[in-house]
Length: 415
Image (cartoon, rainbow, N blue to C red; front, top):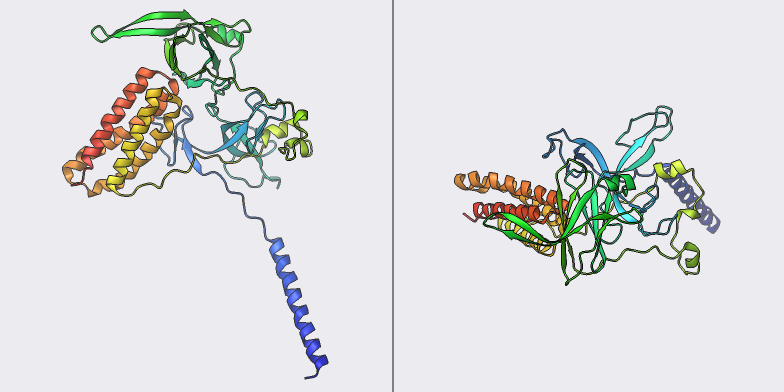
């Protein structure tokens, strides 16, 4: 074969390879993009949004049927609820630091009223469904003034106690979406701050020694009292009636030091000289205000990675004991709002013991089944009372949880 024919053959081969590459690239370019990852479907209670399960069933609190939902997380401005971003940053309206919140993720079509879909897709007119993210009730449990945040037993009011200056207590009151109550609603609340009390176990009566009335502040934004100050940590109890004719509720606050109300960052123009300015939506084309509220981008926010779930009976029982100790430390220092994390982890560990019931002797199994049930219920109770901030109820729930844990440990002891 001549050199010219070799060159022609090589050129033809290269051309064929190039054409194939172009065709393959064109086919790959025409492939649809993979669908975005969606949060898993969960089952939640319509009346108690804090109840979230992975399987259909009934609410352990009200026995209503659970409903399917997709729960996601986002970053929201504490002052402007319409501002929801996909990552931590600053509010584009007031420059305050965004806070993590829980939202419901759904899809709607234009013209559809009160109808939501749990999957993306196409509307009847062929247009893509519109992403809708809605702040969940109790989806925002972030302190707005650097204090301690609790949920009232009525499952609607939320309270934040602050101690910005030694001897000056302030209590902010919110609704179930963490929106501050107006002056009229705040004026319906009555209560007192107890700085010292004594309990007599013989008579089972509590005597209040240092009591201060809670009054509406001059600007009408919070309730306040001046209990004086002795030492850190400072334990103060607010006893509050949220509406006339309703029972009084107790909220126990523990302050290790003076609370600090977060201040807004410097105005945006003052940060223009930074070498790597944080990107904001201002850099994107303007969108109608309604669209900005309806279709914000969000990112899933999860707890820090946990240790691998143990698999053997002794390992699981030891892990439950460790969670019990962790909860005890939080109870001791009054950090009630953080109890739900180890409580739910203990619940998952208890559920991980269920498959091992078959490995127990009959007598041990008969004791283990109700003990596991009480342990799971105890975790739910710890989560619920931790949110309310009542120390006596928290300590009682912790004691019952400990008793259930001891029974589980005894029942699953190596045969």
